[in-house]
Amino acid sequence: MAVYAIGDLQGCFEELQGLLELIAFDPARDRLWFAGDLVNRGPRSLETLRFVRSLNAVTVLGNHDLHLLASACLPRARKRKDTLQQIIDAPDAEQLLDWLRHQPLLHHDDDLGYTLVHAGLPPQWDLATARACAAEVEGVLQSADYKTFFSNMYGDQPQIWSASLQGWERLRFITNCLTRLRYCDGEGRLALEEKGPPGSQPQHLRPWFDWPQRRSQAMRILFGHWSTLGAYDAPGVHALDTGCLWGGTLSACRLDKAGVQRFEYDCPGAAKPGLDQARS
Image 1: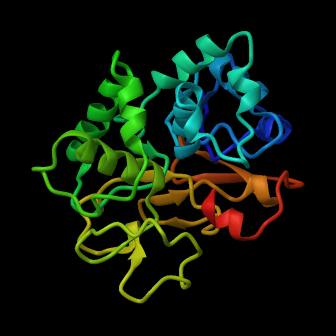
Image 2: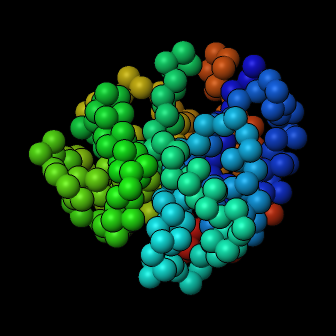
């Protein structure tokens, strides 16, 4: 059995099929992990969501997936550049959205030794803290109170972790780390407004994985979300979002052998690169 972790799809269904052909994926034998952002901005979000749901796959939630869920119950959350209405209007929308709402924010495999999140971890979190925090948000998402969560999900505050955080502020911070984080400062203060490649940020900021004091250093972490970072591999850190939506590649990393073997499928690009690329 082969296990592959795949980067952000964002509705690029044909490119996913091309990548699966490239790696000779066999659904009866192989397993897929998806790094979130299955939908939005690309042309075939509905087909992508239906297909991933049909697989025996691991999927963690990304910011675009949460935005879809929020948009379905809060029309005011919808944005002009979204391509989500096709899902919201689909005859099987209720089943698709219910399935998506029950996916995790973090997946850890003890046997393989890898942890999958959409975006990142603040430097104060080790694996146990990250799993516990993810479970808090998952519990609310899967409860009868999920619509209230979406009403309180958006926003950049608070910026720094404290175990004493409570209520919606605590859940919002956890959600922002796991689905939006790229940069933070030496104290772990999130800088969610910075979205460009390393080197474009103010000097007091570093990528979340580049702080030497982070408590997740012993982990092996796979993440997406950061298309301007590209294919990045460092000890314990593997970036999966290689900009398929923007004409880059769709990446898969094989996890079940020694080391990580990376595969990339060239993508024509469903959206024009530019400022919007950093915001994805």
